[in-house]
Length: 347
Picture 1 (cartoon, helix red, strand yellow):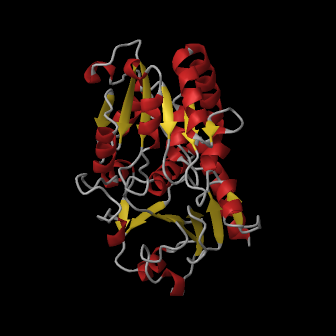
Picture 2: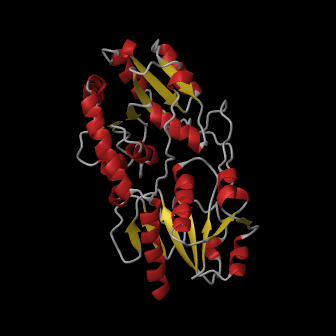
């Protein structure tokens, strides 16, 4: 069986998921070919903060895989592939233009992150049951839910000394891209409502002009601003610095990579519901653990409780770590995907 993966190099969930799955496949002894084209490179969009640089994980890929550049989609037919695995939203024909009309000699497995059905696929993998239910996609022989594989480097280091944070200070953490569509001022407003605001720090990873302006309007102190990052060592140290992970994105998630990362890091999570027009898969990840809230008042109450109780933080953090270790392991999920490849080849 000869398998290829077509990838892109941004710092979003789809980009990271593709890389983590490939690392999982590599760990279990499978070595797919890894393809990219001119559209795989990050490009400036209107949704991005103009003051933040474009970040690419191409260098990370190059440290682990031999990359193959294709000029046109027809080039894929030259590699005697049985399967090409794409990582897409189901509507992004621009990423591999012409694939819909290609007279191909391989099958397509598509990891589909947004639930659209406009791109061709012989088998679709969805990252959550929530996404399928939201799009009214019925379980079938040609689809399956496979959670996003999550990797987080082990580290004993953090940024407390560098950021000037005392060891006994409770730190709330937020980590996301600086995109306008993701930004919500809800976390900043919630932080201002905390009764012990002056004793707590908030680390906001994904600094943006919007966030800075909102904090200024609220006259907030105790916020440490960190630029978006692609560095896996830095990301691991940031999670190590947090005591509580806060997920207050405007939209919600079709999976929720940062929520899964925080769980794997052994952190308690406080996640506030995003737009009701968008799926809330972070609730599926967290389960019935009192870490997902539909209004800010409840989120404030839980944050106050976790800030005051080290025991509660440790309990939820340990529970999250055990769950994440079982559900999001790249090796276990790669084994599941390999089974999908083998089943597809028998059809």
